[in-house]
Length: 175
Image (cartoon, rainbow, N blue to C red; front, side):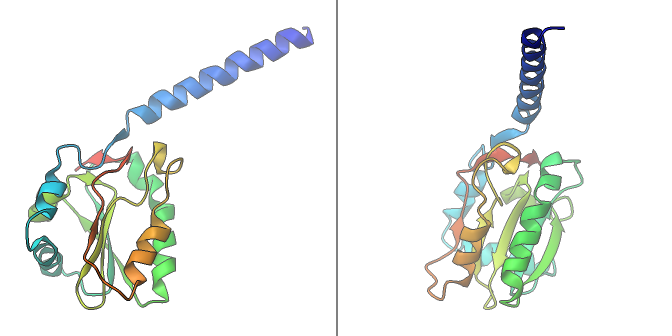
């Protein structure tokens, strides 16, 4: 077989694999808040307090990172495990604990957050600091990893209100 034919065959094979990967990832690529449910809820006057109250009723304590999941099998959830470890490690020195909350078990929360993986960070004084996804982009690893921003928002001494990230597009599943 000639070198030129080998190069052409390898090129065709590589292109076929890339097309297959893109097609697989495209099925998971969607908006985090496609119907603006979270955006509308967050626009209500006391949303932060109401949402943290729902989490407290679910047993979440102040100083917590809350990972939202559901019983639905979701490849995107598996992809977020590295982000979970990264945010947990980043905030562990600040005294934050990690919790997992199934949206299936808390219908009030799932009315507001209907896509996952997602997280909320409640600071030590019980204020909601961040609510939204871990990352954006295909597979949540080719776009922006939001972990550093989330850690900065959480540990900033000046609190201007919660950061609610509803404008994200990436690998998310329906709850």
